[in-house]
Length: 360
Image (cartoon, rainbow, N blue to C red; front, top):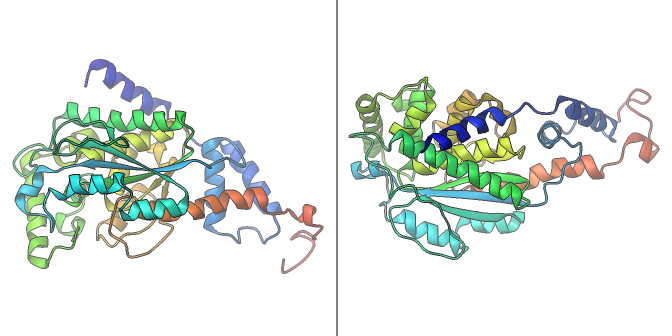
């Protein structure tokens, strides 16, 4: 990444501002005037206030929404850490582009677009709907050396930032993180181990469904990668470069770019949350722009969310990735907006307020 690019990333970080507290107070007052006991809609009310603070409007428009699926390959697959071969990554990218994956089905139901990005797939891909932003043909094997250079990691983060800016310019007002990359739970577990001070045995789970023996091997590979590369826990970009992934870096940038553009970003599962942790370390204020969609089956996911300070909306025992859990949360997030817009106040409905009447 050039010096100019480095300064642009620093500018993005400095552009991220706190939520609009005044608008959030106004949203809270409106919620308390609606025909319900105060706080009775629980998380929906919290989300409604958060969205108002993000967008600077009591009743924001979130009509155009997208899940961004970042795709990249991982050299650590050479160590046999996944139940699937690396060739599955480009095959699944084409499946996304042709509309046949789970995230496509759920996105169609939610009225959302799927934006698929090749940021580091180890194959030459071509498709009219593909956004090609390839930094390199997959990462190197982090078990024997850095996954990528710091320059490459920073460039990948800027890909995500610029994509968030593009989507904001195209009218998208709600984004979600998705990913595809065989081996990426290994990289995500390594990031959790480093940035979350977590033992690899607790950080790494079964990913695509590996057995006990391969799980122990995966944990050992992560330990070896950390010992070999010695990533600096106080420097999230160093950790991202040494034991992360290109698609993870792209999602880091997407989250930061969304926050810069004051757009809410829905965080999917384990891999997306690893990206969210890096983003949170780079820009703590970016956490206010994140909405955690669900708690996955991956054993380190709850630890990741706790480290970031996020509470998941759903518990569906999912572990697919792709952005599927995030897209499932879209209708609930939209419900929070509709409550604000469409629900009558006590005055509108001619109903006595809570202070005048018990049991309302």
